[in-house]
Amino acid sequence: MTPTTVTLPAASAATPVVRSPGYWSNVLRRLRRDPVALGAGAVILLLIIVAVLAPWITPADPFQASMLRRLRPIGTEGYPLGADELGRDMLSRLMLGARLSLFMGIIPVILAFAIGSAIGILAGYAGGLTNTIIMRVVDVFYAFPSVLLAIALSGTLGAGIFNAIVSLTIVFIPQIVRVAESVTTQVRRSDYVDAARASGAGPVTIVRAHVLSNVLGPIFVYATSLISVSMILASGLSFLGLGVRPPEPEWGLMLNTLRTAIYTQPWVAALPGVMIFVTSMSFNLLSDGLRNAMEVKE
Image: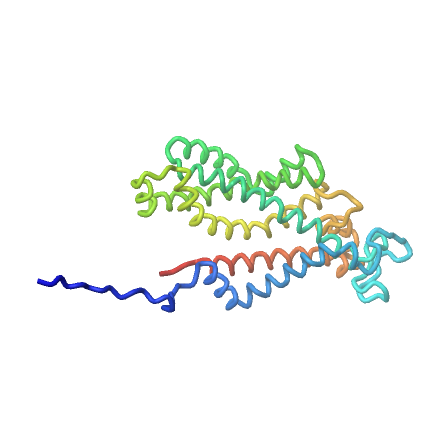
């Protein structure tokens, strides 16, 4: 018999490969459909641009005082947002104050995100005695309200920007540790992690390849929600004299120095508080939008 030759069809190079949209593509698509999150992000981006360019775009010298111009009302010629208790231009001081206010609101959260994520992932993946020791230490910090803990730490370390950032970082680390430990524990019990462990993959490989990609998203979303809290706490520390020191412009410190003018020029005195409110609300709304966009439902 003559052997039959079976010819397999060659794969065509022109055949299109259909790929499903990536995870981050879906996140961006959902964000584009959320006008509230886009608006909040635009406000935050504008504030960051103003903060970065403030030394060059302020209409007047934010440190130049004049007792003849003190507490000018909003709309005064040459002072569109009035003047403070020392006659300094409020618009210029608010613009320059955005630098320290945003810096003290974002940096502690970034540091706490890096440190707290590492500790929480370690506790969640290791489990057992390691998890118990770490989480019991974290629970000790939860015995104190965030405001009181920040004030106590700042009062112990002393006033200053650096000490305020250290205090706020310590306040936020336990919160991020708890979130990181919770999501890591859920991922550790999933089937694909069990399969990777059964195939002989080591803990470092499993954490790098399977755990990090699934836990960093929820931790990041939670961390963004802490930025508004961090800004309010930082402003509170400056208001109490435990953060930024005069004459540096910072919104919380400006509230403190203008509190005596609340009965004579209430609108001018309220401007730093309005900036704190708008910025914190923008971060909250952006965080909500990110949480909705990064939530995958199948």
